[in-house]
Amino acid sequence: MLSDLSYDEIIEYASGKGLPKFRGDQIFDAIYNGKQLEEVTNLSKETKDLIKNDYPDYIIRKKFISKDGTQKFIVEFYDGNIVECVLMKYKYGYSLCLSTQVGCRMGCKFCASTLNGLARNLSAGELLGQVLLINREIGGSKKERKITNIVLMGSGEPLDNYESVLKFLNLVCDEKGLNISERNISLSTCGIVPQIYALADEMLNITLTISLHATTDEKRREIMPIANKYSIKEIIEACKYYFEKTKRKIYFEYTLVKGVNDSNDDVKRLKTLLSGLMCHVNIIPLNEVKERTLKGTGRLAAYDFCEKLKSQGVSATVRRTMGEDIAGACGQLRNKILKDGI
Ligand code: SAH
Image (cartoon, rainbow, N blue to C red; front, top):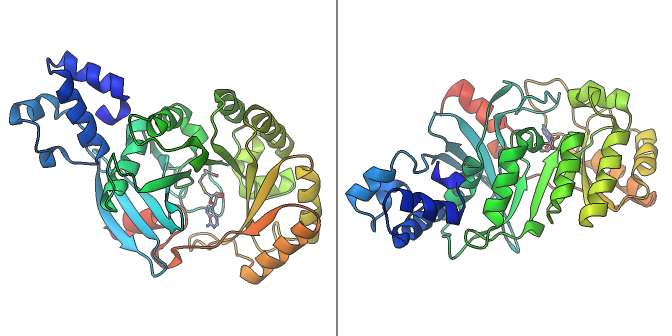
């Protein structure tokens, strides 16, 4: 698919089809403006026929707008698979939360994305497609980009689709394309240690976020199967390496689950685990998933936990929840659609 290719590769592709360079530029612009092929007016029918099998085939299937202004999009790919993306408006611009896989195979006990397992990986071009389509939907274009920030925190585990994610990062930051700054991109992982080292070696300026959610391996294994493979200690070591290489502060996500990870001992252990690491903890009140039995602590308890952490000298904030009325949490909306239809 053409959105998997860089600018130079698209020009080369056009030339391979016997088209002059300016046609390559027009194809590139059409893709980066998020257009469907039939909407492109400056290409002839013959040219469109030449490229139609390679032109991106993804659409925004549905859009939901929350009372708080958060928007959620269902993007559908050529094979009918769907993913969800969440768009949040901030003072500085728009932040888009992307999905990296259709479904997920990590099996975290609190998460809706993984309920039906992994359907397939997304390609780099399909990751980029989510940005291009939604940028256009909110009035942006290649030249006037509206999306300023990207978080790889939707459905899927980005480091379980490493090659595509890396290629996507290169494409989306390319100055010939959307030219999004690496500093404005966050990647969230449940902690696949070898890929954290690999990513660190890429020396990108992106922010690494770790979904920690527990302070002992035993407890972590109860809620996150990946903890059977990698210990918290190994994850923290990998984070230290990431910081050494990139000098980027590490973020930790800590979803509070009632009676599982919210004790005073957890506060103390968290402090010990993170000491000596330049980091920040985001406390997330669990967004209860109806198919799951885990219970949230509620916002008050989350603020209490956060204050205790801060009094121990750990930098922490409670993440504000957005878009709850539109099934904002990971994978909730896709599951609802898979069940009830679109
Ligand atoms: N697989 C990646 C990215 C996707 S999840 C990861 O594990 O980081 C994005 C964040 O939302 C993760 O921190 C995840 O643990 C959290 N999350 C998932 N389901 C949630 C829920 N029901 N309530 C609160 N946070 C949730």
